[in-house]
Image 1 (cartoon, helix red, strand yellow):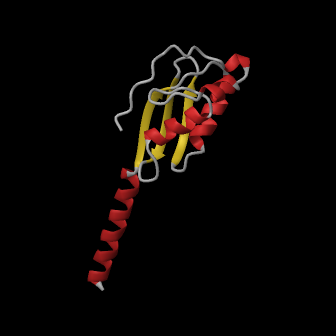
Image 2 (tube, helix red, strand yellow):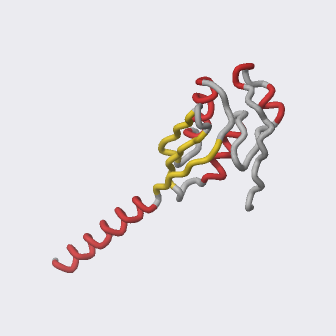
Length: 118
């Protein structure tokens, strides 16, 4: 009986430590201008499986995203945002997608995109 209890405690401890280790927070730059951009950017990030929260600040152009790193990573999140029409530090939106954004959402695209490590 005592042995079963110790095994149960060990399993519960392992599971709880694993779930805490999977949560990660990252910040990165995302180009955009307005409240419509903010909604689009956050929606794209939140649409990625494993993302638990996404907050883009239109003044600083910084995105803070929290996610389960066993389900996704920063690169996948940035790719989803670029597919929505917004350049990130590692991914540039396709010209066609950018051109379809409302006029108020067309940000300055002269900022260089970093080369991916992959």
